[in-house]
Image (tube, rainbow, N blue to C red):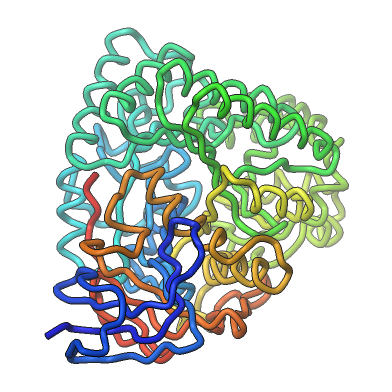
Length: 523
């Protein structure tokens, strides 16, 4: 007898092919039967007539670790509610292991305060073991963060590493990959990777290639110098022979949008040369950025203490102000989402703050960085919607949240603003595909399932076939509706009726069952 049968659905298998009218039989956490199963017996039969059945969605660019929500809210309801059953974190250069020293953990503090954090691991295998011992609503895996490795070794030092230190980094990375790490992530835009040289990055990328894992890169610039930053990532991956994923690809700032055609052309030429390349994108024109990245690079070089020290020196403060003056029109409409030690600033624009204090907008930015001790994350509507749609349709893209998992009951108590992509990215994309004819539904499903599984080398997830893990989503294409907004993100999408994780129903008839069925993914 089977555990569950999904009966009479239109099955999108995750490969991008056309749907087939099949029953799907599940037993022991796996898909064990496909076809006409009317003669089969099951403990639970779910009639999904008129609905789509597809693999669980894989969020390849997730920050539930760096926002600490995998520990605070392990059910990850905002992800499950949109059909996400597996997440890959450790992105943008920051992971929670390995920890060569306690300095390594500071790589995540730009997103979340570490006050009160309780860790009982140092090495990557210990970290995965600790995750496996807590309840998990979704499957979780992790990249190894370059900033975590580097900062754990040299702290806040502003310099290139020595040859001996480079060997230590390689050994740390190799150990983490042997323990099940998904690959290496670079966050080259951030303070503690800014001084990483080509030789350092190339040696680590070759280690990634050795284990056939993924090299994930947050470009050094997403604005004026985005083409040079892209060339750096392409050169690195091609020189090492590694599979490359570019994180949350976009061009920030209207003045830089004309670079779009050149950006795509360079990616496509690299693909035609044989580079295995992916880029992820979220379906929103508003980004969720760390505020200090708007400053000139020298201003935040060396990390938080160095930045705050410069802001306290009148000459350097004036120099930073001068560099921000050309961005005043852009900065004035940015909304503060997280403000560290100054939570009363959340929800305000820099235009509001400047007017209230009788200062310029650039001065307001520096005042906020000082009062919040540089732990500031902001909303910025700086992405061209037309370009965003082109990237969503592009055959090399995958769709991800670049967000984190939260619980829905937090609406009235959560002190910071949360990007709606944490609650609705997958459904928003599917809704665009079906209602705006952005692309065929089969291709849209592929970008959420089979393609990210391919990038991560997860052969038994992201697909509906016999012996695959029973991660399954059922939804009504006509009822899909993403309801989360910037003003009110804690709203679950409509249209998803069932979500199964490893053979257990996490959502049934549109309601959470309370089951924790996630597993740790060891690559």
